Length: 345
Image 1: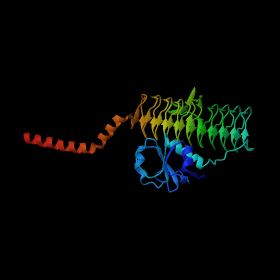
Image 2: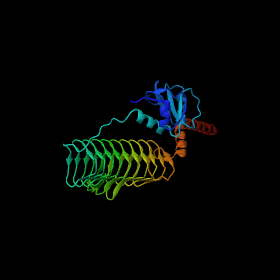
Image 3: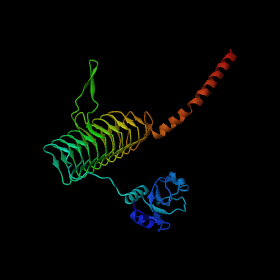
Image 4: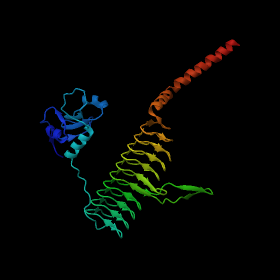
């Protein structure tokens, strides 16, 4: 770990320092957890009240922040990005990756390895695989035959990439993920389920990151496609023939059913589920635990199950919360009508 003064940090993040430049920073933490000697950050205005109770010695804040504080500030355009830069500088990455080809790795025939490729212990690379320059295959990973992997990609321990997959450059795939498993395709014949062959592939474009224990199924025919720049959290299921657009975010425990098309810059929050054969437009936000049962136009924010536009869903939720009172009032009204009828008779 490195210690830095606020003056050094302000230069590192190209920020404007308000406070004593000689203050020494020994750690970095969240605004609630920070202790004396730590630097923290504030990216969301709704958390500004936490400044008063924070023990941090300095804060990286937005240029637009108005709240007064006696703590030293470093103002920047993007506090989260600046804080990440500080953390990376103070806590250098100590992960150790394999160098060269380990003697226990199994390399098939006609395999093409680029310059400075590393393959860890007991990794398996089957026949006719192509791997680009500076790609790292960690211990126990499996690369199926005729797979193609680009440059500077990182495949962590115990990842499985099935046959004929195409993985781009600068991709990161975390442990336990399976790419190219069979799509869930069955047809019922005489009361039993018969498997439908899944003959397609998976294509993952450049600069994608895939978390741990993700399953991306191969297409029934054609391809399942994850486009450039998309980031996928842990424990996500992406079914056969799904297309995910550029720079989308898919958060943990999301499930996307077969042949759905997800646009670019989409956010799928945790535990949301999407039925098959629907289209989610560009810039859509799907709230946590939402159930998407039909296509969604671009630039929409939907929540709930079944998912609806946020402004409509809020009204439904508000009415639902009042339902016990409505039922009580209805019962009272029903009794009043009953009494009125009896008196009239």
